Length: 200
Image (cartoon, rainbow, N blue to C red; front, top):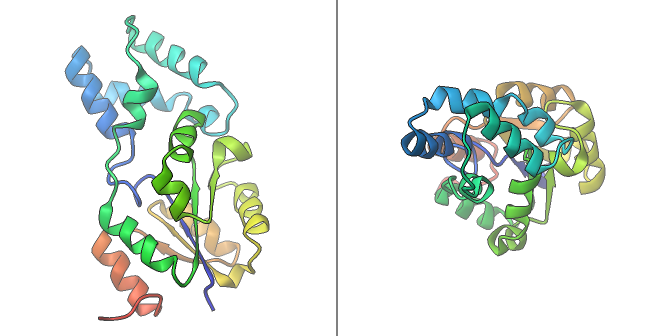
């Protein structure tokens, strides 16, 4: 019986993640190809997600790679680029009445701080787990195990929702019931099939 639900952030709770809309904004401002911006970001985002480099160092490397020299606040711009999926967030609030709900995401230190300071998130989730704080990231088994240990439920009592297939496969191998997020409509259909939400 499911007692707890783990929600991913990028691609599930927000619509596109942070990077794509952020790259779009920078492309318009500096005339740089979006693909180049995304590539430059991803060169160090694994280290950033694990908390192995500080935000200042990451953004300095990023700007140097793109030859950007102004003092624009990239951290603020990146954090505010994402758009919350309001239907999913309302779903989480409704589920909280019956289940424990947790945020479980690969996120860098600056975005982690941004979300922890948002009252909407801190009031909605029972706990939030971020790769930058745990120094490991999905799909590494260590991250899943840390979260399982901290939430205090058996594996067969936990439902994991993520848009990344490799993350889903890892969770299933570890014995977690898992749903891949394809669309908001599909998520509602899948949850009805599991009898997590009613068919009304």
